[in-house]
Length: 258
Image (cartoon, rainbow, N blue to C red; front, top):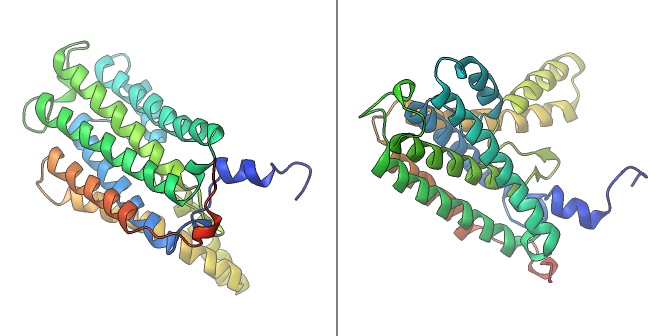
């Protein structure tokens, strides 16, 4: 460990590695990546903003701010909500040791699923523009707008939590709510593997390409079906809950205690 590296206990809390606490961590995180892609596509169809692709929201914020301020502020609410979800996990783990272990990580998955369930209720009862009204016509401060605001920010919060429950899966960085980085890295390593015939590069691109594939499969499911937001969110909630329920500790003896 270099002088610049954080202590192992700090790294465990800030950059948690799924491999250290769960069996089959890579597969589980790929399932969550598919959930992230599905929810992002559904939220975009419903609200006109992203709840996982925050780079896209940074663009939408400024191209909509003058002509459609209501929708622009929904992009901002997603940015803030996602950041708060990430901060929530980091702060919680800084206060207690157990949220960084298997039991705490499973609890955080249940928390994310619960918040998603609430967003489904809000979206289903107060606002569904695919049926009722376009987001471009939303009146800032109206009841439908506040419904969208709450649903978007809470959905982004829950995805921020999902993204921070695990940051690594073995030697690979996870990508529960963003597929662009792994896609670019996979293309880079695939090219390097073809040129240099290096086994390490071959292993890296094969692992990394799995995340954008899982992501796009989730988005494809939403784009090619006519299911409404509450039903899609329910599927996402049940999937996250299933991941948490069936997760098994890799070494129960290593579970941190307060």
